[in-house]
Image (cartoon, rainbow, N blue to C red; front, top):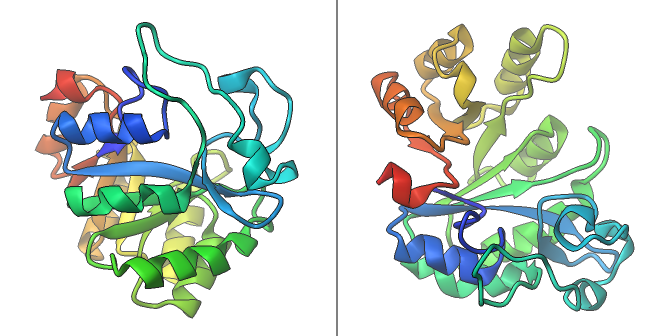
Length: 234
């Protein structure tokens, strides 16, 4: 899956970057979503605009109209447009891919659930349950989504930034019962991956950008990978 599209060539999470990844032959796309001030879903990774536009504004403090006036930074030699998308603008690409991974971003464990209403509306409208994975590091959001929409395929993003992370993540997986475990590539041979496989979970690894790690992932029976470096891995 193209991680945020093809970000080494065209600005991440933009329509041209997604189309470039498709043209490069990916099986699917990965993208990030957040909620604007007026409760619209936008495709963007960070909580603020600083990294990609050198502005201090937070996504949650701006309306969709304000967000879409922002011009993002570009890669060297890039000519394509570089504006922040509304999630609905990705819909025309859905027929061109086998899988789409939509990652819900949240700023804390207890925040971010307001995105579920518009997200569920999007999923219901586009009928993509056979090709869509909804993932998040936030287990509470995934739990609420599963309760409200059981047919949704869920990917649990493994969080290493906590004490006794393996046990805590395992407990959350038992609670959520996700179909997928998304794991950092450094943990693809860990016991938690072996445990998840025995439970029948698909294992997807992020973010693999070199062939050596890619071959290790294949050797360990990883089901899917997220990559920034599509041409190199091919």
